[in-house]
Amino acid sequence: MNQNIVIVGGLFILAFVSGMLGLGVAFAAVPFLGLFYADLIHDVQPLSLILNGVTALFSVIGFAKSGFVDWKKAIILAVITTLFAPAGSYFVQYIDQKYVWLIYFASVLYLAYSLFKPVKKTATEENFKAAAFLSIPISILSGFLGVGPGFLLMPSLIVLGFEPKKAAGINAFAVCPPSFSALIPHIATAHWNIHMTVILVIVGSIGSFYGARLTSRHVSNERIKQLFGVLIVVTTMYKIYTLLR
Image (tube, rainbow, N blue to C red; front, side, top):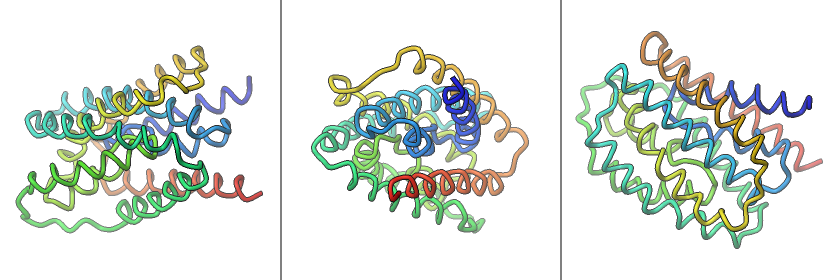
């Protein structure tokens, strides 16, 4: 019972902070849930993907209410990510979990670098064609890791000239459907705790919505990026510690 309370409370915090960046919760949820569930492929990834899709959806609602979603670009990216994410999910079924964790840890280092690196404010024009092209390999990798593509798509959009809050709004919509399409290859082999899944979906949805609303109205992107980076790095480092014991 105490463990479940920790899982629910921790997931709410991660969803709230993830919602602030429009990322969906999976990238932070994978190492966090990995502390409690041993099987990465059949326990952690399926649960993280469904949580990612739902939390991203509620994050979209929060950003849309403040006018930060460019629907045309978001829909195009969502179609691309939805089509390519299942390829990675299918491939990961045949890979040893330790190699998946290694790739995940490398991705964490990249994300932490992206989140802490200062973003120079320039008049750079939005390069949407490059964003659409990059979304293909990003989607395949995200499906492989059992997370939404937002952890790479979000910083990519910013680098390609999108204003951070607009990038978060587009990203939130673009990562929602591929989270569910990437779930398809897991359905036959996933281990589900229905009661816990429903609770986490509800808690994650609430946290993600209010996180997005808080960012879109009041909070600086820079501070939120750094907070999210700290949470992911600390959780991941502890997961590495448990694997090495």
